[in-house]
Image 1: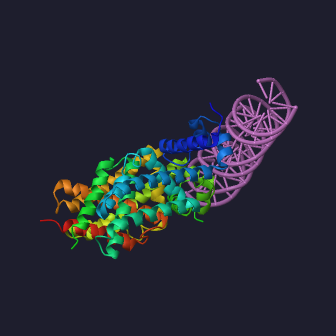
Image 2 (image 1 turned 120 degrees about the vertical axis):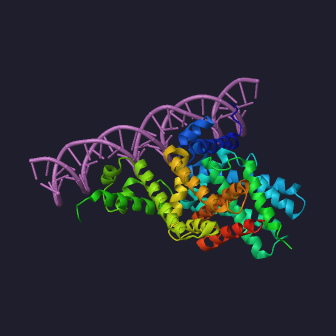
Image 3 (image 1 turned 90 degrees about the horizontal axis):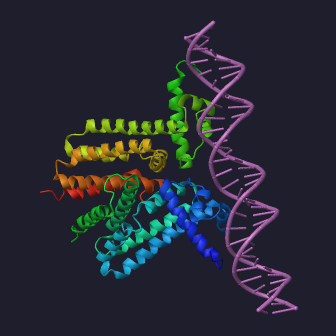
Length: 194
Length: 194
DNA sequence: TTTTCTTGATTGATCAGTCAATTAAAAATA
DNA sequence: TATTTTTAATTGACTGATCAATCAAGAAAA
């Protein structure tokens, strides 16, 4: 066990452990000991690096958010034109890394936590705004502003809705079906454009 | 304070207190004392009538479920034909009683709890199946079976999605806008019928 | 009198967070 | 290089708070 510059390694391991613990448990009521145990360290060490449980949870959420952001950036860089950008945004949200049970459970748990924690809510609103503006950047090319906004809100709701159903393992639980249903909606809406 | 047949009164008061406590707190981590205090009784009495906290939570969820069922039944009885039935199902989900912040927060909290508790999950799946079959009974008149299923799944996801956004107070947070967006989707899909 | 209703006090478990002490690595010094 | 010194990493044991659940006992009704 190397002892050089442990901080980033341990932090990362603890964040990964947090995601997997939440994913298995399905909620945020995981204990520091469970998380630390999964990461192979003591709970005291988790406190040493993160201070309080809240901070570890927030760091975990920021990690999730930045991973999604990175995936999105990659996908958008490969897209040509607004229509492809739109599909890229959708497909990233249903990609294997984002739509896996652990990540989905963590997202759902964080949505609930956001009701209590203003810091969490702020993070989620950042995510929502970014999703909205990414969708708008694709939709604005085809729809008047008002319709584009309504369509973006609808797509965002659909994505969240499929995440919930995935967490419950009910309905179209696989990523491909969910993505297809969202794409179907987009096609339908855009087919009416003059 | 009348002492005759207290059981149903107290149970009902405790269930109402549970909903309002969860609504205020935003999560299921409310304590028995908080709930009991809200209902104006001691926590020991809550245990006396419900046994364990789980059972109170399950009873609360069954209550929510049966209220939704009753609202739905009323709305469907006034609907003429499949198209109106479809709109009735949608409007009930966004009615003042169902889409209020307390109820929405409770639903979201129960979705999370369902990850851990098989009993809760069973209850939620009952709800999901009922919603699906109600939507199908409207959609089947206009769409071939495969498309009707896909459309029902999409509508269900949209409803859940707008519930989440309502809980977060982000996006179209009012019932009317959310209902309109779902109706817009239905119109769009049905307008393509031959 | 018996049954229903109600609570205060208590118990036992769980958990976040702290702290003093230990080990190991790095850096500084001889 | 060998040494001491300083800094980083790590933990077991502990504390205090919280909470679900129990229970014995009291008040009220039947």
